[in-house]
Length: 273
Length: 212
Image (cartoon, rainbow over all chains, first blue to last red; front, side):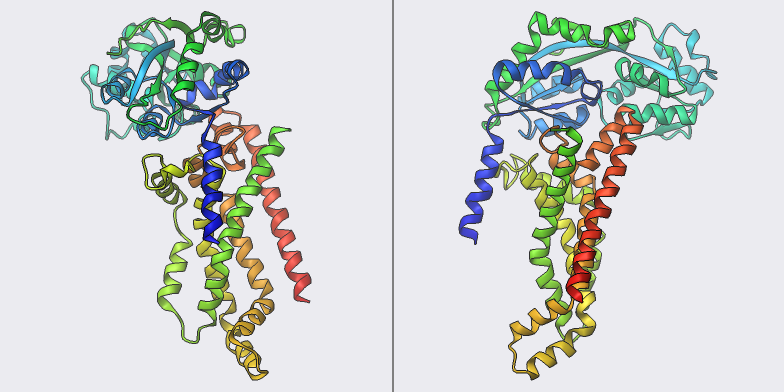
């Protein structure tokens, strides 16, 4: 039996591995439906099917860092810089941005909505000991949250009011809503969930600290020779094309009255060295 | 094809193949262990403990095994259906073997003695035991199938929940929940329960008819 089983399994694996592009992404670009809106155009033009693995930035980079994906779409500039430095990724390109918001119960017990500086808003939550839900999952949003606490000079970890959900943004918003807690969210997921949760946007300002930047990288073919680099290069050019960038910017703009993802045309607003 | 139908069929394909693969090894092992005279405490402990194997841990194990940087990476099985089937069959195996072992233990000796006294061989004794234990086999298969079709940890890590490629009912429930589409998630959950009930009912009917 082993004589035919091995070629069978091998052949099946090979036929499935060839051709499609595997894209490991953060959950927000997938769960918001953005990828379903723009990737079919790429497949139609190039004939390359794209398999999306939507797992959160930390896991996406971990998968790609073992050569199990051909490209990534993530939103954590510091982690991206490390990924490039470790020579796991190449051809970094900034695709789009939106912003992070602090949301919380409409009563706003800590008085966050008066603040014009996000660090002061976090200090108020800290001093009040108001419930705060952290993603706690190494996602881009979680990384941003930790960076903000650090910048504010605070260590909320271990405080009884600091809850770590360990789940995705949607589930975390539901948890925050049920607990009457504050949380940090990306704009897109919040707009999607707004009608289903009892949370208000309490800090929603043009603050450079609150920029949420989405980037694309191909996995380095020199380090992982089996990756579909040609397809990853093609997808990069496609995503940066003006008409596709405009499509990204226009995605669901009518429904929400603002862009979920503002196109960057490859120009990073947060530098990724 | 309707996406719901596609996902449901894929769930059945993955769970069905995994159950059959696990049964191919698990049933003979279970029968053999159950048919041995003295109780096999070590084997029983291992199998019963295996019933509690955490799916995410099995999933992680197979992730490292099948990863392109892992020992079986060249097969390219990560994020494919065959890869999911392998991981799921490891989860189903202890259930199938364990149920079979426990189920045949009582009648194994009488059956063997009877077959031998009629001049039958050892193999014939096992085949007769298998034929006499259809209900046990059904219970074992139902337990294995139920465990893998309802499981989400391993299929997520090994399959990656790729739309039109590796998404199954449980991972679809997770993603709809994550999106906040709770009604759609609940509807998918209902389909999952319905499918499990249907397959189990078919198995039971099959077992009853043959047992008569």
